[in-house]
Image (cartoon, rainbow, N blue to C red; front, top):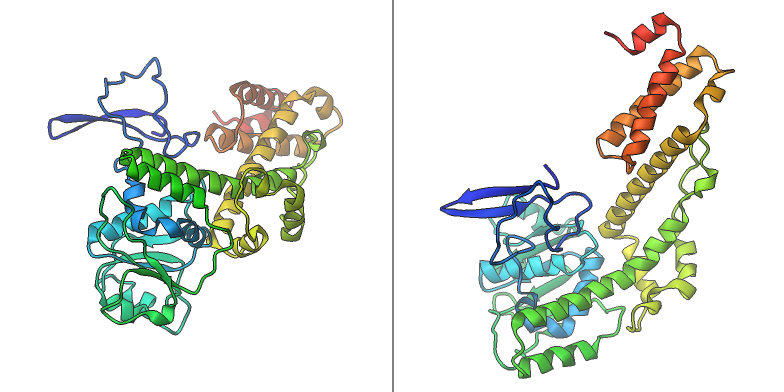
Length: 388
């Protein structure tokens, strides 16, 4: 069950695993011990089964990390050609993780081969490539997927005292079958300027032999702050579309969430844009316009809208529970009263299933209201609504 901690015996070792609940944040530390849970003394606490060494993965592409972040943000089709399945998989997983806390809503294949069932679909030139990040090792894919807009070829990752040779940006027309050199083959132009200060800090860390996990923390924090700076204006605008609590009346259908208008949002960036939290300059407006067409905007918007609808429904239930139900029932017909019972029950089922963010006291009051309303009805209707 979500939120529980399980002890799993595996080959003579007990792994204690916390099953994430909806309120848990990805990549966060395990929650503090609850009174009813027996937490084992842990020598090492991992936030996931496999934690990527992000710095090692991105070492050959550090100068293009922001461009790759933009490509991931926009859900662009990308092929990663690596010398081994391990390198291919790690690079794909590193790329898909760099959008945190934004959920990655596109498809990705850490290790894709010509034997996969979608091979023909991905290789066809009769339609645009899908929004997928493909990790491959077979050079044959350079020819087969030459029409894909972005191809990243990397070598084996190496950890040394100096920054490894960085892959260069190259036009897709420079692709040569089978003997293509490492590089990022794309015609894409980044919207944001490169953060040179970050590269200097990482290079300085290499020279001072700073541990790789510290370099990873530095890089991950940079990507986290970049994503947050991009998302915060969207969150603020989305919150402004929520109806005011005072407009939610107990005996009326709750007001609708106002529609997301892209032009209104873009105008709001002038005084509440990412420039408030991010020092990077560039074409933020152009990046947002392209983001609106991506699967990640669709995924983000659907999730936020769903949460707001649930919040609105929870506030409506609270408003009903705080109202004087006896006064409301005085001039209501039996049909209206029965309709209220059915609607309250439906809301109660959703709330008890944790689909609505409602306090326990509100749930208890709603149950009491249902009993009160049913008790005011004739016995024949009570028997129908509360069968023995």
